[in-house]
Each structure stands twice: as structure tokens, then as C-alpha cells.
Amino acid sequence: MKVIQTSLKSWYNPVVFQKKEQAMPNTKACIYCGFSNVQFCKAHVLPDSLGSFENQPTLRGKVCAKCDSAIGQYEDQFVHSGIAAFMRPRVGLKSRSPFRRKHVGQEPIELKTKDPITGYEILIEPTDDAQPSNELHQCKALPQVIVDDQKDNHRIIRLFDKEITPECLRQAIKNTGLRGQLKVMPLGLTKIQEDHIFALLKIEKTEISGEDAVGSIIPVRATAAVTCDKRYFQAIAKIAFHYYLVSEDCYFNGFEPTLEPIRRFIRYGEGEIERFVRQRRGHLTTDTANGWRPKYYGHIFVANVSNKSINIGLKFFIGPDCDPSFYDVVLSSNPFQIHIRPFFFGHNYAYFEPGERKGYHGIMQNLGAANRIILPKRP
Image 1 (spheres, rainbow, N blue to C red):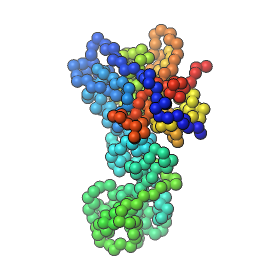
Image 2 (spheres, rainbow, N blue to C red):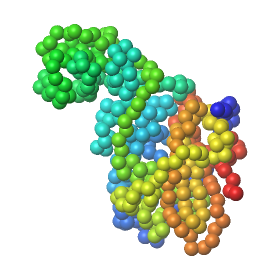
Image 3 (spheres, one colour):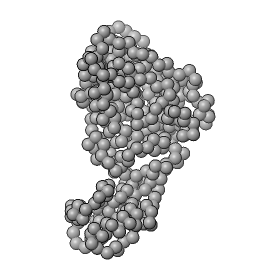
């Protein structure tokens, strides 16, 4: 795998995406709910929790505050239930851990690995001090209790609540379904917290799981269980839709009937996911298909516009050691009444190194030769 070795500053193109105000229809109304005389807001392309980007335009006078707030709930699930949950620490973005708390009704991410000391499969989470240059995240054990029946069976009890009563803990152990003489071992806790657990159970400590401070491990191999629902894909569709509407190459103002299905899917979840959003393996640019990778993490968006359809490809957190699958979002089928020449356009949202940030987390730039990432050519 090749990695671009140019400096960060030379990689940026000073000729950037030009901001523009969208042409307004005769009736000033929200493109999602259709109501007029409402409070409008500046609608972003990327969720705020993915960082702020220099040169990124916003969608003005198109989305009311109520719809923007509702869609923001879907974006919360997207940011905390997929690749963003793992990659945000690598680009210096921090928030409440998606490995400890629910997001929009979805269970926390379960990231598990085999503890090299105890041999148990345990719950872990990436540490906050993970660096972009590390090929492996440093991880630590989450607060948990391992219950072992000493017959090759064990269960994990999460300890995310600050206050744990004896009744709740005993009931959780009972709910494991394990019987007989059980061995209880806390993990991811300080010595004081461990002593508290044993005091609640009114038993003597027979296992010591760590030092006075919470220790860290680096997993060799870990498996993750991620849960999401339709709202996750509604958020992805929204990113693609807004990206197209703020583009200089957009033919539409967002109110057209041909865009109604995607609007209804984004706002109200109408329609099947596969009609609008599909996850695919592959590449969005010629350079990445030939093995090149950006030196810094970022997001690559590519629009493919023709009489047949308007497709937006979204690849999140591509970087020197990460080449994830991309999402193909169909905004419209047979969108034009007249014949147009098919064309591409695309942009890269590149994150800055922490020391080079000046009010922004990154920069939005055109794809092209000047930025070392080339769009594919049509046959």
C-alpha cells in the first residue's frame, strides 16, 4: 500500500469550493415538512460531532429548526453506532463513550477481546489518548463483573451505573443463569471500586483483577457487535442530500417532485433502505483504486450525475491505514426532463493534525490533480 508523503500544506488546494447562497423558491418553506413561516436554521452537510471544516458551505433557508433537530437525532446514532465511533478518537474528536451508553435507543457497542491475563472474553473500549499514527488503538477494560461457574461457563455484567445496589447486583448475577459455586471477578475498576463490589455481595475477595488504578491492554484481535436501525441510514442519506444541494453543480433547489422520495425517507423514514442507501466495497477515486491513500484521515464524497440517476458516494474516515466500504446514496432516478451530459464532481474533507488546527478540525477541498486525488474517468 502506498501512502502520499507530501506535506499537509502542499496537499491543500488554495482554490477551494466556493460558498454560495441557494436560490429560493417563490414560497419560503421547509424542504422536509413543507411548512412556511417557520424558524429556519443553517443546515450542515456533516454532523457537528464529526468536526468543523474550513470552506464548508451550509444550507440556508431550506430546513426549519424542528426538522433539523429531528434529523440531528438520527445523526447521533450514525456518529455513535458505526465506524465514526471507532475513528473519532483518532482524529481528536471526543464525546461520551458509545461503548458505555445508549444512543437514540440503540444499545452500546460491544467491543470484545480475550484478556491475555485471565483468559476471559471481556468488554473493552478505545482509550481517549489514541494517536492517529497508531496502527492499533490502545484499549482498556470497561467496568464489568465476570461471573464464572468454574465449568467453562462465564457471563459479563456491565457496571456502567454509578450507584449499584446489592439487590440489583444480586439480581444481575441471578439473571446470568449460572448455578452452583460461582466465582466473581470485577474488571476495569479501581481497588476501592472492587472492594465495594465484594462488600455489596457480602463475600470475601478471592480474586484480584488489577492494581489500584485501572489498567490498559492492547487487543490482538477484537470483535464488535454494533446495533443500528433505519435512522442510521436516514442520517447517511441526509449527508448526501445536503452535500448535493450546496454544490455549485446542483441543478435543483430541493423542492422538486423528483426529490420528494429522498426527502420523505430522510425526515420520516418512508421507503425501504435499499432503495436509497446501499453499502458497497470498492473505491470512489482512481488514485485510491490504484493503492494510494491520503496521508491524513478524512471523508471522500463523489457525485455521479446523469439522466439515469443522481448518486452520491460517501466514504468516511479513509486514511493511511483505513480503507472502509462506501455508501452509495440514490437521490433521484430519471431526474431530468432534458438530456444532460453525465459528469462527476467530488470533495475531500481532510482532518488537520492537532497542532495545525486554527479554529477548524479540517478543510473541505475539491478533488483533482492539485489535491492528489483524481476522480475516475468515464469510459
